[in-house]
Image 1 (cartoon, rainbow, N blue to C red):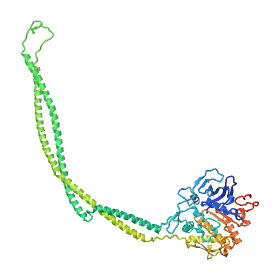
Image 2 (image 1 turned 135 degrees about the vertical axis):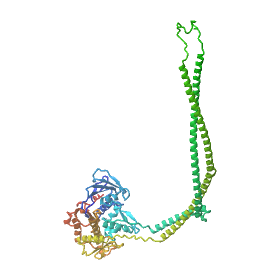
Image 3 (image 1 turned 90 degrees about the horizontal axis):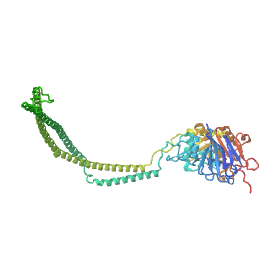
Image 4 (image 1 turned 90 degrees about the vertical axis):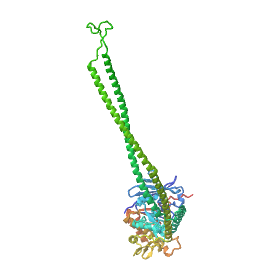
Length: 624
């Protein structure tokens, strides 16, 4: 059991006004005193600071005050100050630290939203219910996210609601909210929320959605029926098998023709490759002949040169001796000593010249033979090239004059059949779509006229939880000396959803008893939850649980005018004292606790006397 947070201070401030404040503590806090001293105002301020939409009703003492502060302390020891304008109540401002701390405030939205900075999420985080918890809100299993304001009604009750004849579970007083309030009560008893529920659509909305689907499908059918007008030429024919047979026959011919084309193209390719090879040989031989012609001219030049030398030698041999043209003596005289002389070529020289000539003539003969051989080979190659050209031309003729035109014709016919087949398939597809859409319309009509048979009742068995809760409530009533409590049973009838005490419905008792048992109900929920689930804030705030307003509700029966016995009052306060600091209980009450109990609680008394103790929450107005 743990107290998640508790209130330490409530402060109302204004410009040039003295702060009006109250301090609270864990355990029991009692603010008692006469009427019109501000007790209900303080209750409403606390409610306002915990997310209520409306600020406290204006009273004369509020004049000049504009801001409310609520200081809380968490179980971890953290202190937060919550600030909100009582003039413009749209937003909250929260800071970490006490009222006097200099820390900056952070803005928080006043309602639950996706923005985590909202007052509901702030308090839900403190009590450990900050996950996306769902509450069932109607019989169709629609859900709402849990808000802290949902929980507030089960730990805070004002002086009007505390005497209500309706169940404390139905604390909002709104009949449409009862399913949601039951879901919240069960959540605090079991920890099970409505996240697993499957929502059932409202029947009118469900039918409207189905009608919209039918209208949409009918529009699709009309568009497809218009599209069918493009298929008038084939819609009444049985083209499927006919097209399939034609396609298969033509395709066989086309494949066979393509195979013949491949054969002839391969053959032409072989001829062409051979022709390229022959041309390469011919080109090589021609280049070789060009070189041989140069060599031939070279040999011819060398032979002519040697022939000239040999011829010169012959002419030299035919010369006769003469006297020296210089000195007149014969050339053979020994005294002839001129520096130049003419010598006759030797025999060896002539032999060498003839040998060289012979070699050149042999080479010239070999060269002539080689050139002749190459020319013959070139003639053969040229003839082969001509033959290959004829073969290539023949293959081209077979391909382009016969096979290719046939293949193109077959391909065109196959394409025509494919296009026609595609058109036929489109036609069949549209027909199929129309049939399926018409079937879908019939299914939707049946679904529209058939109410869903899904069971929307909560299948969770809460009986054990209700019994345990009732036992806790019974123990509390006994501890309060509440008559002779023999039985407390929880009536789960959706119109009641309240406890029956000693066979009598709680709401049927007098308003004093109703107020007391209402308080006991909330107190039992607090004790039950923090002992089993620990998701309750651990706070109980009740306005006037013991006071009977005899000047109101004159329409009540005689039992409505009965006061709560003195013994119950003493036991009432003592039970909260005995539970100690494991919770915070704040009671606003006209009646005072016994003197022997006052020093065991945080007791604040509003005297409504200027000279006796504290006048009220605010200082008394000055007389004019």
